[in-house]
Amino acid sequence: VQLVESGGGLVQPGGSLRLPCAGPGRAFVYYNLAWYRQSPGSQRELVAEINTGVGSRQVKSYAESVKGRFTIPREESNEIVSLQMSGLKPEDSADYYCNADVGGITYWGQGTPVTVAS
Image 1 (cartoon, one colour):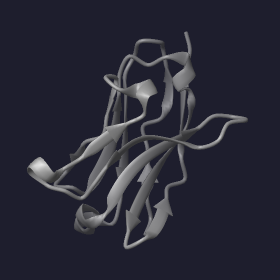
Image 2: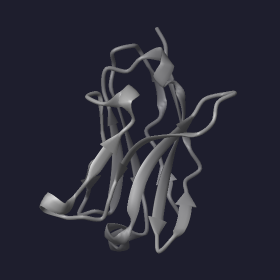
Image 3: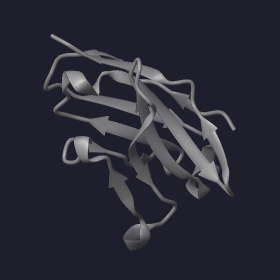
């Protein structure tokens, strides 16, 4: 399964970015999905995740450091999972990775860099 992230780049503090991650087409709906990030010298950390639930059974969770600023919507008929980031801070600078899990098998994208600086 190939995951393809995009949307990274340089943004000023307080700005916004959307990172889309494309997966295996319509089958993506069966995957638990997440976004992680890793900055130099740090461990990879979970930023946001969304389960396979629909409607009231859909569950999203966020790291405390991004709550209220980031969201993780499924889009394009569930063929894309995005990380919508707003109110960006310099400490959000990192490589961001899309993660997909189905049946205990985990897949990773190649990462997309985000730099928050003035």
